[in-house]
Image (cartoon, rainbow, N blue to C red; front, side, top):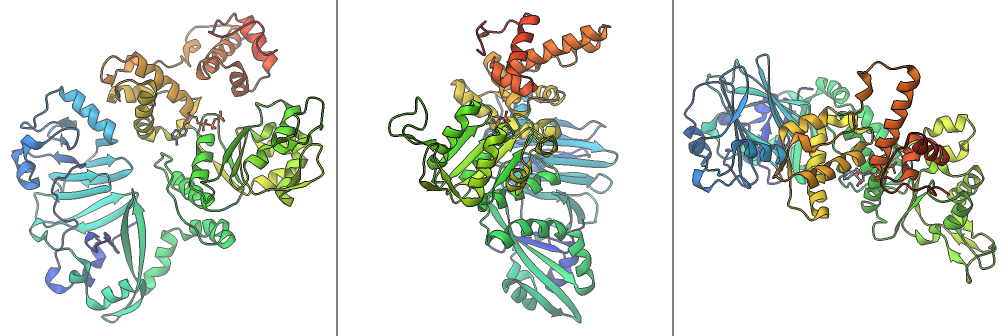
Length: 586
Ligand SMILES: Nc1ncnc2c1ncn2[C@@H]1O[C@H](COP(=O)(O)OP(=O)(O)OP(=O)(O)O)[C@@H](O)[C@H]1O
């Protein structure tokens, strides 16, 4: 989508982006504006400098006022990518004082930000975290980009006369101008025609401008905690087209399930790791979902983060100061589940405690009740749960007094509930009751492009938990990680990283310390079908035990087999695993 009809400003009304088509709204004497203010190098910036011409690199220090002796790699990072040859090679500025090895520095940079610079035909594509920019090397001989925690700032120097350029951010193509002589005051009020400015500050309107009607709308967006104003300019006839382009259909769906039903929304931000549109959609759904009281159903494979997200939703909701109660319906024996959920009165059954016991519904009062593995709730209890959800009241086991329910329900499952409904293993009415706001979390193998961000987030936590010095992931190690399909999702990744962090005796985890299950080990040797089946079964059990640190119950659940079956198979294949005992599962 072309976004040459946008102006973006920061909260002080300084222009940070000026679209091509908006130039006509700029006062005459300023017709060659710049895309961004000066690129002074600040703390937290990552500088990427791409050049395909022979250059004296001192240019960078001069232009960006980087006092070389003050550069510290932990605060200010410098990547210079040279495209002199076909290969794009990161190189380090010569007078850049860094004591360690260059490879280490590059790894540190990769750790801090996900940066990739690749060349495709005549284009250079620079990706910093989720932001992608592409440059045509026929036009740009040198490209300098500043990326900081608040998104990408950039400054472009090109050898030719033309100052125009195109930049792609979050799938939007921005066209702009860059003239470093004019990098001075880029304030909206000073630059833009008075009538247009007036319209913007009124929040947008249909305005007459030089014989045309222009529709101006202004929206505030938040990018990594920084607020920007995005102002769009549409001349009457292009308006309809833009509405379609902007995919307002999607917004309508969101509105239907949120604002219309639940009133005004307060947004909170979720960290989901994913670059594709569907992740943005997912993030929005979570934001909307957290702001409401609607029942949310989280689906996804084991280890994708359903529990993690359930807690996040609670923590971002109005109920955050009230309890978050987690019940794993698969982990509690069928006959106990009812009394756990509803509590019981004294004398309700043999062995019932004196004075009775409060149930989880009571404990979660005012807060959130997270029904994990909801597919495992016995049919008999499903009816009772439905009643609670509908009437918002319940009786304790053996009790006659009505108790009020004030909880938000979040349910999760890795089963296909719709299939279970068809097979009459799950009540249809309950299914529709909990399926109000379904959110599907994709498996890790579908998010490999952002696995680096995931690692950057969880690796420091692992090191802290293990009380070891922080370690980093090297580029080659990352490549190895990306080749594995991660059947156990984030949980498996955490386990592998934990092992690697323990094994690693350097600052950067080498590829050899990443020990992955050999998922295709048997593909090479010719075997009978029976042998192959048995080998696969054995390996699958080993992997599952590995994944859940030897917890047979979870491994059986993960493999979708019964408890007795896993025990029999462990015996049959003589699988030795620390902690397995004869009387397990009895
Ligand atoms: N977005 C996230 N940020 C940080 N850690 C995460 C995130 N998502 C998942 N994890 C971690 O991954 C591991 C698995 O997540 P979680 O237990 O939430 O998965 P699950 O889908 O509930 O699994 P299961 O279905 O087996 O119960 C946890 O240790 C969790 O902390």
